[in-house]
Image 1: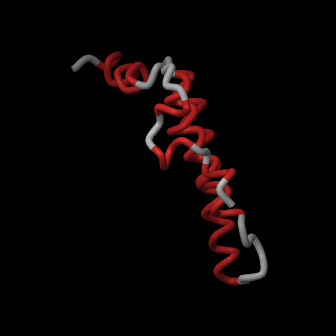
Image 2: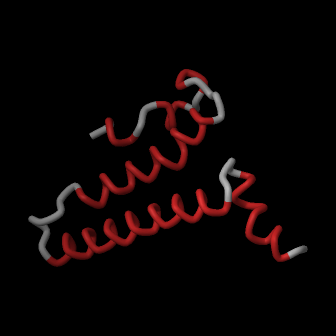
Length: 91
């Protein structure tokens, strides 16, 4: 496998260039770190960050699953039931 292919095969499989994938994956990483820290703070102080971790998970799900399927032309009514309504609206 060529070095170029190592850096482009996966991003291309999700419809992104290397730099688009770098940006998207970095955004996911930052949100995951933020959510993880919020969960740890909540573990220590249960009255703080009560919804922050679950909101981060909902945002990540919406960005990764729902939005990617819509970008591929799948209409919301064609999505599996669990993915049809963004989690951020299921509070």
